[in-house]
Length: 525
Image (tube, rainbow, N blue to C red; front, top):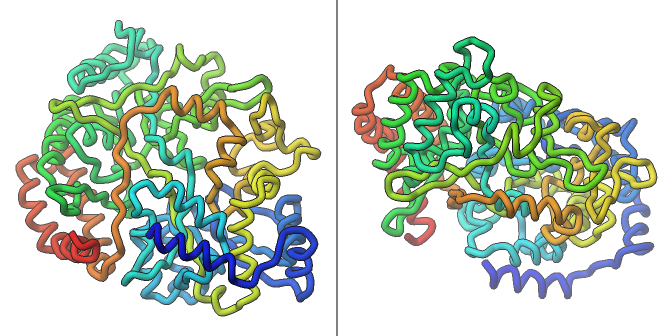
Protein backbone atom coordinates (compact mmCIF):
# COMPACT_ATOMS: atom_id res chain seq x y z
CA UNK A 1 0.00 0.00 0.00
CA UNK A 2 2.91 2.38 0.68
CA UNK A 3 4.04 1.82 -2.90
CA UNK A 4 0.52 2.64 -4.08
CA UNK A 5 0.51 5.89 -2.17
CA UNK A 6 3.93 6.81 -3.50
CA UNK A 7 2.66 6.24 -7.03
CA UNK A 8 -0.43 8.31 -6.25
CA UNK A 9 1.65 11.23 -5.04
CA UNK A 10 3.70 11.11 -8.22
CA UNK A 11 0.52 10.89 -10.24
CA UNK A 12 -0.81 13.94 -8.44
CA UNK A 13 2.12 15.94 -9.73
CA UNK A 14 1.34 15.21 -13.35
CA UNK A 15 -2.45 15.42 -13.20
CA UNK A 16 -3.95 18.75 -14.25
CA UNK A 17 -4.38 20.84 -11.14
CA UNK A 18 -4.87 24.41 -10.05
CA UNK A 19 -3.30 26.32 -7.23
CA UNK A 20 -5.07 27.78 -4.24
CA UNK A 21 -6.37 31.33 -4.22
CA UNK A 22 -7.90 33.04 -7.20
CA UNK A 23 -7.43 30.15 -9.64
CA UNK A 24 -9.16 27.71 -7.29
CA UNK A 25 -11.97 30.19 -6.69
CA UNK A 26 -12.48 30.59 -10.43
CA UNK A 27 -12.54 26.83 -10.85
CA UNK A 28 -15.66 26.62 -8.71
CA UNK A 29 -17.24 29.98 -9.48
CA UNK A 30 -17.30 29.62 -13.26
CA UNK A 31 -20.29 27.29 -13.24
CA UNK A 32 -23.79 27.03 -11.83
CA UNK A 33 -24.09 26.08 -8.11
CA UNK A 34 -24.07 22.36 -7.41
CA UNK A 35 -26.38 20.70 -4.89
CA UNK A 36 -24.59 18.43 -2.41
CA UNK A 37 -26.32 16.07 0.03
CA UNK A 38 -24.07 15.61 3.06
CA UNK A 39 -24.01 12.79 5.63
CA UNK A 40 -20.29 12.76 6.45
CA UNK A 41 -20.61 14.03 10.01
CA UNK A 42 -21.54 12.96 13.54
CA UNK A 43 -25.27 13.62 13.75
CA UNK A 44 -25.59 15.13 17.21
CA UNK A 45 -27.87 17.81 15.80
CA UNK A 46 -29.33 19.04 12.52
CA UNK A 47 -26.99 21.50 10.75
CA UNK A 48 -28.82 24.67 9.74
CA UNK A 49 -27.49 26.39 6.60
CA UNK A 50 -29.77 29.39 7.17
CA UNK A 51 -28.13 30.30 10.48
CA UNK A 52 -24.65 28.79 10.15
CA UNK A 53 -21.93 31.15 8.95
CA UNK A 54 -19.58 28.16 8.59
CA UNK A 55 -21.93 26.37 6.22
CA UNK A 56 -22.54 29.55 4.28
CA UNK A 57 -18.78 30.17 3.93
CA UNK A 58 -18.20 26.65 2.62
CA UNK A 59 -21.08 26.99 0.19
CA UNK A 60 -19.62 30.22 -1.14
CA UNK A 61 -16.07 28.87 -1.35
CA UNK A 62 -17.06 25.87 -3.45
CA UNK A 63 -20.20 27.35 -5.08
CA UNK A 64 -22.44 24.60 -3.75
CA UNK A 65 -25.85 24.30 -2.06
CA UNK A 66 -25.63 21.97 0.91
CA UNK A 67 -28.44 19.91 2.37
CA UNK A 68 -27.87 17.66 5.35
CA UNK A 69 -29.23 14.23 6.05
CA UNK A 70 -30.01 13.70 9.72
CA UNK A 71 -29.86 10.12 10.98
CA UNK A 72 -30.42 9.30 14.66
CA UNK A 73 -26.99 8.25 15.92
CA UNK A 74 -28.59 5.74 18.31
CA UNK A 75 -30.42 3.99 15.43
CA UNK A 76 -27.99 4.65 12.61
CA UNK A 77 -28.08 1.35 10.71
CA UNK A 78 -31.83 0.94 11.01
CA UNK A 79 -32.81 4.47 9.95
CA UNK A 80 -30.19 4.84 7.23
CA UNK A 81 -30.90 1.35 5.92
CA UNK A 82 -34.53 2.24 5.28
CA UNK A 83 -33.64 5.38 3.35
CA UNK A 84 -30.98 3.66 1.26
CA UNK A 85 -33.30 0.74 0.52
CA UNK A 86 -35.91 3.18 -0.79
CA UNK A 87 -33.44 4.39 -3.41
CA UNK A 88 -32.38 7.61 -1.67
CA UNK A 89 -28.68 8.34 -1.53
CA UNK A 90 -26.57 11.22 -0.18
CA UNK A 91 -23.48 12.31 -2.08
CA UNK A 92 -20.99 11.66 0.72
CA UNK A 93 -21.70 9.55 3.78
CA UNK A 94 -20.24 8.42 7.04
CA UNK A 95 -19.95 4.63 7.32
CA UNK A 96 -20.63 4.19 11.01
CA UNK A 97 -20.10 0.45 10.87
CA UNK A 98 -17.14 -0.36 8.62
CA UNK A 99 -18.41 -3.91 8.24
CA UNK A 100 -21.21 -2.46 6.11
CA UNK A 101 -18.72 -1.40 3.41
CA UNK A 102 -19.15 -4.59 1.41
CA UNK A 103 -22.94 -4.45 1.70
CA UNK A 104 -23.07 -0.85 0.54
CA UNK A 105 -20.78 -1.68 -2.36
CA UNK A 106 -22.93 -4.60 -3.45
CA UNK A 107 -26.03 -2.42 -3.19
CA UNK A 108 -24.41 0.00 -5.61
CA UNK A 109 -24.26 2.80 -3.06
CA UNK A 110 -20.50 3.31 -2.73
CA UNK A 111 -18.31 4.41 -5.61
CA UNK A 112 -14.85 2.96 -6.04
CA UNK A 113 -12.12 5.26 -4.73
CA UNK A 114 -9.85 5.19 -7.74
CA UNK A 115 -6.13 6.04 -7.89
CA UNK A 116 -7.05 9.15 -9.86
CA UNK A 117 -9.38 10.28 -7.07
CA UNK A 118 -6.75 9.72 -4.38
CA UNK A 119 -4.19 11.56 -6.46
CA UNK A 120 -6.35 14.68 -6.30
CA UNK A 121 -5.97 14.62 -2.51
CA UNK A 122 -2.18 14.54 -2.07
CA UNK A 123 -2.18 16.02 1.45
CA UNK A 124 -4.77 13.50 2.58
CA UNK A 125 -2.90 10.54 1.09
CA UNK A 126 0.38 11.80 2.57
CA UNK A 127 -1.22 11.87 6.04
CA UNK A 128 -2.57 8.35 5.55
CA UNK A 129 0.89 7.16 4.55
CA UNK A 130 2.58 8.89 7.49
CA UNK A 131 0.27 7.33 10.09
CA UNK A 132 -0.18 3.90 8.49
CA UNK A 133 2.34 2.23 10.78
CA UNK A 134 1.22 -1.33 9.96
CA UNK A 135 0.62 -0.71 6.24
CA UNK A 136 -2.96 -1.95 6.60
CA UNK A 137 -5.02 1.21 6.93
CA UNK A 138 -7.03 0.50 3.75
CA UNK A 139 -7.71 -3.17 4.44
CA UNK A 140 -11.23 -2.82 5.80
CA UNK A 141 -12.14 -0.28 3.12
CA UNK A 142 -11.52 -2.76 0.31
CA UNK A 143 -13.82 -5.09 -1.57
CA UNK A 144 -12.22 -7.48 -4.06
CA UNK A 145 -8.98 -5.54 -3.91
CA UNK A 146 -10.54 -2.16 -4.69
CA UNK A 147 -11.02 0.73 -2.25
CA UNK A 148 -14.62 1.78 -1.60
CA UNK A 149 -14.22 3.98 1.48
CA UNK A 150 -11.92 6.73 2.66
CA UNK A 151 -10.41 6.36 6.09
CA UNK A 152 -10.89 9.03 8.69
CA UNK A 153 -7.58 10.04 10.25
CA UNK A 154 -8.04 11.05 13.88
CA UNK A 155 -5.07 11.34 16.23
CA UNK A 156 -7.30 11.25 19.29
CA UNK A 157 -8.65 7.84 18.25
CA UNK A 158 -5.17 6.35 18.58
CA UNK A 159 -5.58 6.57 22.37
CA UNK A 160 -7.53 3.88 24.27
CA UNK A 161 -10.91 4.64 25.78
CA UNK A 162 -10.65 5.73 29.40
CA UNK A 163 -12.17 4.29 32.56
CA UNK A 164 -13.50 6.99 34.90
CA UNK A 165 -14.06 6.22 38.59
CA UNK A 166 -16.01 7.97 41.32
CA UNK A 167 -12.96 8.48 43.51
CA UNK A 168 -15.11 10.02 46.23
CA UNK A 169 -17.14 6.78 46.36
CA UNK A 170 -13.99 4.70 46.68
CA UNK A 171 -12.77 6.84 49.55
CA UNK A 172 -16.17 6.67 51.23
CA UNK A 173 -15.82 2.87 51.40
CA UNK A 174 -12.22 2.93 52.56
CA UNK A 175 -10.31 2.64 49.26
CA UNK A 176 -7.77 5.39 48.58
CA UNK A 177 -6.85 4.65 44.94
CA UNK A 178 -8.42 3.11 41.86
CA UNK A 179 -7.98 -0.67 41.66
CA UNK A 180 -5.51 -2.37 39.31
CA UNK A 181 -5.74 -6.17 39.41
CA UNK A 182 -8.95 -8.02 38.66
CA UNK A 183 -9.02 -9.10 42.32
CA UNK A 184 -8.74 -5.48 43.48
CA UNK A 185 -11.49 -4.57 41.06
CA UNK A 186 -13.79 -7.21 42.50
CA UNK A 187 -13.20 -5.96 46.03
CA UNK A 188 -13.85 -2.36 44.99
CA UNK A 189 -17.01 -3.25 43.05
CA UNK A 190 -18.37 -5.17 46.00
CA UNK A 191 -17.79 -2.26 48.35
CA UNK A 192 -19.31 0.39 46.08
CA UNK A 193 -22.33 -1.83 45.57
CA UNK A 194 -23.10 -2.74 49.17
CA UNK A 195 -21.52 -0.11 51.43
CA UNK A 196 -23.55 2.96 50.44
CA UNK A 197 -20.77 4.86 48.64
CA UNK A 198 -22.95 7.90 47.92
CA UNK A 199 -24.03 8.00 51.58
CA UNK A 200 -27.71 8.44 50.83
CA UNK A 201 -28.81 5.61 53.10
CA UNK A 202 -30.20 3.57 50.20
CA UNK A 203 -29.13 0.35 48.52
CA UNK A 204 -29.22 1.85 45.01
CA UNK A 205 -25.69 1.64 43.57
CA UNK A 206 -23.82 -0.84 41.41
CA UNK A 207 -20.23 -1.31 40.40
CA UNK A 208 -20.48 -1.28 36.60
CA UNK A 209 -22.82 -1.29 33.64
CA UNK A 210 -22.27 -2.16 29.98
CA UNK A 211 -19.37 0.15 29.03
CA UNK A 212 -16.87 -1.41 31.44
CA UNK A 213 -17.60 -4.98 30.38
CA UNK A 214 -15.21 -4.76 27.41
CA UNK A 215 -12.36 -3.88 29.80
CA UNK A 216 -13.11 -7.06 31.76
CA UNK A 217 -12.70 -9.05 28.56
CA UNK A 218 -9.46 -7.12 27.99
CA UNK A 219 -8.14 -8.54 31.26
CA UNK A 220 -8.29 -11.98 29.64
CA UNK A 221 -6.70 -11.09 26.31
CA UNK A 222 -9.22 -9.89 23.70
CA UNK A 223 -12.32 -7.70 23.34
CA UNK A 224 -15.20 -9.27 21.37
CA UNK A 225 -17.56 -6.25 21.31
CA UNK A 226 -17.25 -2.54 22.07
CA UNK A 227 -20.51 -2.41 24.02
CA UNK A 228 -22.90 -4.97 25.41
CA UNK A 229 -26.28 -3.45 24.73
CA UNK A 230 -28.96 -3.01 22.10
CA UNK A 231 -29.71 -5.32 19.21
CA UNK A 232 -26.22 -6.41 18.29
CA UNK A 233 -25.55 -3.96 15.48
CA UNK A 234 -22.02 -3.10 16.66
CA UNK A 235 -18.88 -4.68 15.27
CA UNK A 236 -17.67 -8.14 16.17
CA UNK A 237 -13.95 -7.66 16.72
CA UNK A 238 -11.30 -10.05 15.50
CA UNK A 239 -7.98 -11.00 17.04
CA UNK A 240 -4.92 -12.70 15.59
CA UNK A 241 -3.92 -16.18 16.77
CA UNK A 242 -1.21 -18.36 15.30
CA UNK A 243 -0.98 -15.96 12.37
CA UNK A 244 -4.71 -16.19 11.55
CA UNK A 245 -7.61 -13.80 12.03
CA UNK A 246 -10.31 -15.23 14.31
CA UNK A 247 -13.37 -13.82 16.02
CA UNK A 248 -12.53 -12.80 19.58
CA UNK A 249 -16.06 -13.77 20.65
CA UNK A 250 -15.39 -17.49 20.21
CA UNK A 251 -12.03 -17.75 21.95
CA UNK A 252 -11.47 -19.58 25.27
CA UNK A 253 -10.45 -16.33 27.00
CA UNK A 254 -13.91 -14.93 26.26
CA UNK A 255 -15.40 -17.83 28.23
CA UNK A 256 -13.16 -16.94 31.19
CA UNK A 257 -14.40 -13.36 31.14
CA UNK A 258 -18.02 -14.46 30.84
CA UNK A 259 -17.61 -16.77 33.83
CA UNK A 260 -16.36 -13.87 35.94
CA UNK A 261 -19.06 -11.49 34.71
CA UNK A 262 -21.79 -14.06 35.40
CA UNK A 263 -20.54 -14.37 38.99
CA UNK A 264 -20.43 -10.59 39.40
CA UNK A 265 -23.95 -10.25 38.00
CA UNK A 266 -25.30 -12.98 40.29
CA UNK A 267 -23.75 -11.15 43.25
CA UNK A 268 -25.38 -7.90 42.19
CA UNK A 269 -22.24 -5.99 41.21
CA UNK A 270 -23.49 -5.24 37.66
CA UNK A 271 -26.44 -2.97 36.97
CA UNK A 272 -29.29 -5.34 36.00
CA UNK A 273 -30.34 -2.84 33.33
CA UNK A 274 -26.92 -2.88 31.62
CA UNK A 275 -28.40 -4.22 28.39
CA UNK A 276 -30.31 -0.97 27.82
CA UNK A 277 -26.99 0.88 27.91
CA UNK A 278 -25.59 3.72 29.95
CA UNK A 279 -26.12 6.33 27.26
CA UNK A 280 -29.84 6.93 26.89
CA UNK A 281 -29.58 9.85 24.48
CA UNK A 282 -27.62 12.94 23.60
CA UNK A 283 -23.86 12.99 23.25
CA UNK A 284 -22.56 9.45 22.72
CA UNK A 285 -19.78 9.59 25.33
CA UNK A 286 -22.00 10.57 28.27
CA UNK A 287 -23.08 7.88 30.73
CA UNK A 288 -26.35 8.85 32.36
CA UNK A 289 -25.98 5.87 34.71
CA UNK A 290 -22.67 7.30 35.94
CA UNK A 291 -23.96 10.86 36.15
CA UNK A 292 -27.06 9.80 38.07
CA UNK A 293 -25.12 8.02 40.82
CA UNK A 294 -26.03 4.54 39.67
CA UNK A 295 -22.60 3.06 38.86
CA UNK A 296 -19.12 3.70 40.22
CA UNK A 297 -17.13 3.52 36.99
CA UNK A 298 -17.81 4.06 33.30
CA UNK A 299 -15.73 3.36 30.21
CA UNK A 300 -17.17 4.54 26.90
CA UNK A 301 -15.33 7.86 26.52
CA UNK A 302 -11.86 9.23 25.81
CA UNK A 303 -9.61 11.07 28.25
CA UNK A 304 -10.27 14.42 26.56
CA UNK A 305 -13.97 14.07 27.37
CA UNK A 306 -13.01 14.46 31.03
CA UNK A 307 -10.22 17.01 31.04
CA UNK A 308 -10.67 20.04 33.28
CA UNK A 309 -10.08 23.45 31.65
CA UNK A 310 -6.49 23.16 30.44
CA UNK A 311 -5.94 26.89 30.10
CA UNK A 312 -7.71 29.88 31.57
CA UNK A 313 -11.06 30.51 29.93
CA UNK A 314 -11.31 27.11 28.27
CA UNK A 315 -14.27 24.78 28.80
CA UNK A 316 -13.93 21.36 30.43
CA UNK A 317 -14.30 18.21 28.37
CA UNK A 318 -17.82 17.35 27.23
CA UNK A 319 -18.38 14.58 29.78
CA UNK A 320 -16.92 16.53 32.68
CA UNK A 321 -19.06 19.51 31.70
CA UNK A 322 -22.18 17.33 31.66
CA UNK A 323 -21.22 15.74 34.98
CA UNK A 324 -20.70 19.15 36.59
CA UNK A 325 -24.22 20.20 35.66
CA UNK A 326 -25.51 17.54 38.07
CA UNK A 327 -22.56 17.68 40.48
CA UNK A 328 -21.50 21.34 40.59
CA UNK A 329 -19.08 20.77 43.48
CA UNK A 330 -17.23 17.94 41.74
CA UNK A 331 -13.48 18.33 41.23
CA UNK A 332 -11.42 16.39 38.70
CA UNK A 333 -8.86 14.31 40.58
CA UNK A 334 -10.91 14.32 43.77
CA UNK A 335 -14.50 13.45 42.84
CA UNK A 336 -13.75 11.61 39.60
CA UNK A 337 -10.48 10.33 38.19
CA UNK A 338 -9.27 8.06 35.35
CA UNK A 339 -8.25 4.56 36.35
CA UNK A 340 -6.37 1.61 34.88
CA UNK A 341 -8.10 -1.25 33.06
CA UNK A 342 -8.16 -4.39 35.20
CA UNK A 343 -5.12 -6.64 34.94
CA UNK A 344 -6.02 -10.29 34.51
CA UNK A 345 -4.42 -13.50 35.75
CA UNK A 346 -1.80 -13.53 32.97
CA UNK A 347 -0.98 -9.82 33.22
CA UNK A 348 -3.17 -8.82 30.26
CA UNK A 349 -5.25 -5.65 30.27
CA UNK A 350 -6.64 -2.97 28.00
CA UNK A 351 -9.64 -1.03 26.83
CA UNK A 352 -10.90 -0.61 23.29
CA UNK A 353 -8.85 1.53 20.88
CA UNK A 354 -10.21 2.61 17.50
CA UNK A 355 -6.76 3.45 16.16
CA UNK A 356 -5.60 6.54 14.28
CA UNK A 357 -7.62 5.33 11.30
CA UNK A 358 -10.96 6.15 12.81
CA UNK A 359 -14.22 5.69 10.98
CA UNK A 360 -14.78 5.43 7.27
CA UNK A 361 -16.74 7.56 4.85
CA UNK A 362 -17.63 7.04 1.26
CA UNK A 363 -18.47 8.91 -1.90
CA UNK A 364 -21.64 7.52 -3.35
CA UNK A 365 -22.28 6.27 -6.85
CA UNK A 366 -24.67 9.17 -7.38
CA UNK A 367 -21.93 11.73 -6.67
CA UNK A 368 -19.35 9.88 -8.75
CA UNK A 369 -21.58 10.18 -11.81
CA UNK A 370 -21.18 13.98 -11.73
CA UNK A 371 -17.55 14.98 -12.47
CA UNK A 372 -18.01 18.53 -11.13
CA UNK A 373 -19.57 17.34 -7.90
CA UNK A 374 -16.86 14.72 -7.45
CA UNK A 375 -14.23 17.40 -8.02
CA UNK A 376 -15.74 19.53 -5.25
CA UNK A 377 -15.95 16.68 -2.74
CA UNK A 378 -12.35 15.64 -3.30
CA UNK A 379 -11.14 19.23 -2.96
CA UNK A 380 -13.10 19.70 0.26
CA UNK A 381 -11.39 16.68 1.79
CA UNK A 382 -7.99 17.77 0.52
CA UNK A 383 -8.40 21.27 1.95
CA UNK A 384 -9.04 19.91 5.46
CA UNK A 385 -5.53 18.45 5.33
CA UNK A 386 -3.76 21.11 3.27
CA UNK A 387 -5.21 24.41 4.50
CA UNK A 388 -4.82 25.13 8.23
CA UNK A 389 -7.14 28.15 8.18
CA UNK A 390 -9.88 26.19 6.41
CA UNK A 391 -9.49 23.30 8.85
CA UNK A 392 -9.75 25.72 11.77
CA UNK A 393 -12.87 27.34 10.33
CA UNK A 394 -14.69 24.06 9.71
CA UNK A 395 -13.78 22.83 13.20
CA UNK A 396 -14.19 25.95 15.32
CA UNK A 397 -15.97 28.64 13.31
CA UNK A 398 -14.86 32.29 13.25
CA UNK A 399 -12.59 33.94 15.78
CA UNK A 400 -14.01 37.39 15.01
CA UNK A 401 -17.51 36.12 15.85
CA UNK A 402 -16.37 34.77 19.21
CA UNK A 403 -17.08 31.19 18.13
CA UNK A 404 -13.84 30.21 19.81
CA UNK A 405 -10.81 31.63 21.54
CA UNK A 406 -7.10 30.97 21.27
CA UNK A 407 -5.62 30.93 24.76
CA UNK A 408 -1.97 30.03 25.17
CA UNK A 409 -2.13 28.33 21.78
CA UNK A 410 -5.26 26.33 22.60
CA UNK A 411 -8.30 26.59 20.30
CA UNK A 412 -11.35 26.47 22.57
CA UNK A 413 -14.99 26.58 21.41
CA UNK A 414 -17.04 29.23 23.19
CA UNK A 415 -19.12 27.28 25.76
CA UNK A 416 -21.69 30.07 26.05
CA UNK A 417 -22.48 30.01 22.32
CA UNK A 418 -22.16 26.25 22.06
CA UNK A 419 -23.14 24.66 25.38
CA UNK A 420 -23.37 21.17 23.89
CA UNK A 421 -22.56 19.20 20.77
CA UNK A 422 -26.10 19.58 19.43
CA UNK A 423 -25.65 23.36 19.39
CA UNK A 424 -22.24 23.23 17.74
CA UNK A 425 -23.47 20.73 15.16
CA UNK A 426 -26.43 22.96 14.30
CA UNK A 427 -23.91 25.78 13.77
CA UNK A 428 -21.91 23.60 11.37
CA UNK A 429 -18.87 23.02 13.58
CA UNK A 430 -17.11 19.72 12.84
CA UNK A 431 -19.69 18.97 10.18
CA UNK A 432 -17.96 19.79 6.89
CA UNK A 433 -14.54 18.31 7.64
CA UNK A 434 -15.96 14.87 6.79
CA UNK A 435 -15.02 13.40 10.20
CA UNK A 436 -11.32 13.65 9.32
CA UNK A 437 -8.50 15.80 10.62
CA UNK A 438 -4.86 16.38 9.86
CA UNK A 439 -3.01 15.01 12.92
CA UNK A 440 -0.41 17.74 12.64
CA UNK A 441 -3.16 20.37 12.70
CA UNK A 442 -4.77 18.65 15.69
CA UNK A 443 -1.56 19.05 17.69
CA UNK A 444 -1.47 22.74 16.81
CA UNK A 445 -5.09 23.23 17.76
CA UNK A 446 -4.64 21.76 21.22
CA UNK A 447 -1.23 20.64 22.44
CA UNK A 448 -2.30 20.69 26.15
CA UNK A 449 -5.09 18.27 25.33
CA UNK A 450 -2.66 15.78 23.83
CA UNK A 451 -0.40 16.25 26.84
CA UNK A 452 -3.45 15.35 28.94
CA UNK A 453 -4.07 12.33 26.70
CA UNK A 454 -0.50 11.19 27.26
CA UNK A 455 -0.78 11.66 31.03
CA UNK A 456 -3.73 9.27 31.30
CA UNK A 457 -2.94 6.88 28.46
CA UNK A 458 -3.35 3.21 29.36
CA UNK A 459 -3.05 -0.09 27.51
CA UNK A 460 -5.50 -0.84 24.75
CA UNK A 461 -6.63 -3.33 22.12
CA UNK A 462 -6.68 -1.76 18.67
CA UNK A 463 -9.25 -2.87 16.13
CA UNK A 464 -7.81 -5.49 13.80
CA UNK A 465 -8.48 -4.43 10.22
CA UNK A 466 -9.47 -6.90 7.56
CA UNK A 467 -11.04 -6.81 4.10
CA UNK A 468 -14.74 -7.16 3.47
CA UNK A 469 -15.66 -10.61 2.16
CA UNK A 470 -18.90 -12.01 0.69
CA UNK A 471 -19.67 -14.24 3.68
CA UNK A 472 -19.98 -11.19 5.91
CA UNK A 473 -22.99 -9.92 3.99
CA UNK A 474 -24.63 -13.32 4.23
CA UNK A 475 -23.96 -14.19 7.86
CA UNK A 476 -22.57 -11.32 9.93
CA UNK A 477 -25.77 -9.50 10.92
CA UNK A 478 -27.29 -12.67 12.40
CA UNK A 479 -24.00 -13.56 14.09
CA UNK A 480 -23.89 -10.17 15.83
CA UNK A 481 -27.38 -10.63 17.23
CA UNK A 482 -26.65 -14.24 18.19
CA UNK A 483 -23.43 -13.28 19.96
CA UNK A 484 -24.88 -10.42 21.95
CA UNK A 485 -27.93 -12.45 23.01
CA UNK A 486 -25.78 -15.40 24.08
CA UNK A 487 -23.38 -13.19 26.01
CA UNK A 488 -26.23 -11.41 27.79
CA UNK A 489 -27.89 -14.73 28.61
CA UNK A 490 -24.67 -16.12 30.08
CA UNK A 491 -23.93 -12.99 32.09
CA UNK A 492 -27.47 -12.82 33.49
CA UNK A 493 -27.64 -16.56 34.22
CA UNK A 494 -30.30 -17.44 31.67
CA UNK A 495 -27.73 -19.77 30.13
CA UNK A 496 -24.89 -21.50 31.96
CA UNK A 497 -21.28 -20.65 31.25
CA UNK A 498 -20.91 -24.20 29.93
CA UNK A 499 -23.26 -23.30 27.07
CA UNK A 500 -20.40 -21.23 25.61
CA UNK A 501 -18.94 -24.30 23.87
CA UNK A 502 -22.24 -24.93 22.11
CA UNK A 503 -22.39 -21.26 21.16
CA UNK A 504 -18.95 -21.49 19.52
CA UNK A 505 -19.95 -24.57 17.50
CA UNK A 506 -23.19 -22.96 16.35
CA UNK A 507 -21.43 -19.63 15.59
CA UNK A 508 -18.97 -21.41 13.32
CA UNK A 509 -21.69 -23.51 11.68
CA UNK A 510 -23.80 -20.43 10.97
CA UNK A 511 -21.10 -18.73 8.93
CA UNK A 512 -18.47 -17.62 11.45
CA UNK A 513 -15.88 -20.12 10.23
CA UNK A 514 -16.60 -19.27 6.59
CA UNK A 515 -16.07 -15.56 7.28
CA UNK A 516 -12.76 -16.30 9.02
CA UNK A 517 -11.62 -18.51 6.16
CA UNK A 518 -12.50 -15.94 3.50
CA UNK A 519 -10.79 -13.12 5.43
CA UNK A 520 -7.62 -15.14 5.93
CA UNK A 521 -7.59 -16.15 2.29
CA UNK A 522 -8.05 -12.53 1.20
CA UNK A 523 -5.18 -11.46 3.45
CA UNK A 524 -2.92 -14.32 2.36
CA UNK A 525 -2.73 -15.70 5.89
